[in-house]
Length: 524
Image 1 (cartoon, rainbow, N blue to C red):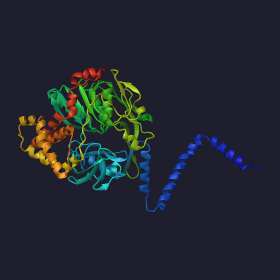
Image 2: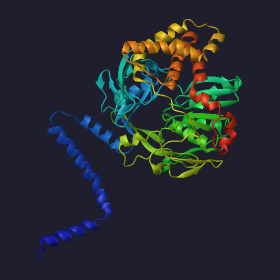
Image 3: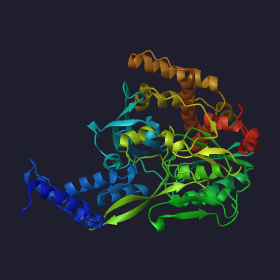
Image 4: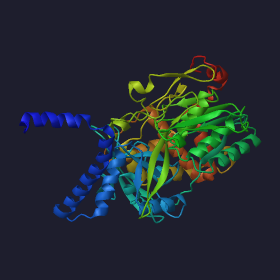
């Protein structure tokens, strides 16, 4: 008896319903690979333009990784070699870190006093063109090809700044220069008893650098420390462990990594008492403090070891591992674990189900509600939350953004011309240097006002900067004059003395012990 069409359909449906899921899983992978192979062949044979297999495979790999998380990435062999040359100091660069934010190539960090910083590039600037060519669709590795090269080469950048609906367009010229890969930047005494260390990134020898820097400050009389992690994009996780170990007692949990594979689940603890385990400590962060920076801050905050001041951090704390991809020498940086602070907080913002643009739109803002809903506690019982970065213990006022004309003035050397002419008239002795570091009125009358007059007349605008912006311009130009007159040491001394974040942090020392014990913050 031949079954009817309806019966055959019913039998087939029943058969498919009871096919073991394991059999389906075995055939699914093979079928999907067949589909992919057939698609590549069809594109190669029939597409309107000639396309090779390498281009198609690389594009497919990029697509696969972007579907996993926003930070796993594929690096082609030539780009990997270029990155190595830059990191080793044999290739000149612009001194900026890039990533794709809201589908736009964006400046995540600017190396202090590097080529881009001197040209007026700021963290958060969105790159529109490089050398008058649109960067739409480029990933960071592709963009770096155009901003790495010979020392002295000038790269033209068009940047978008401010509102996305009505952005300001800024054009700058950046002269490429060799950059040293150092973890520690500025090391200074703020006052006779307070040391300051700027941690710019986490290189492999970061722990040694920090230990040496603090030891030097203690020999100068430092009995407390401000550690600056602002604009620090992260780096080597092992360096974060070593630096945290300097400030913690023996057998303290630094952080944990939580992954799918057993080998990815690890706990990092200090082996002995840290050399600076009792040194009073404050830490500065901002929305561009990311990755290893956040891991370090989360550890110090959970153990009530440091008062954290500034702005909510970026919200990226993933462990990535390098895997070679044969046979061409390509590599892939694959996310293998999330980082959890000692209290159990996951710093990383949620990204599953989100487009990259959605994910990045939460940078430094706390993420979604479910990210920060769970409550955790520090060693002293203070309430802290995870997800969407780390909230500081003390929120500091925001820095006013630089206006579009600032980069024009920097590119035209107006800032240098005005600052250098005034620097030539300053005395060279220590008395003149000290006096200049507090001469806020002089910065305005001798530096900012002549600059504003030149900007208004030559650009045909009527600029009306706020008081906060005028103060920032005074610090920038005053620092330039200090560098010209007294060199790098003069500049660093000027910058540390006049940084608003550092000055604000200094006012909280009397409250330090109480705040770390859970007392409410009161404005000094």
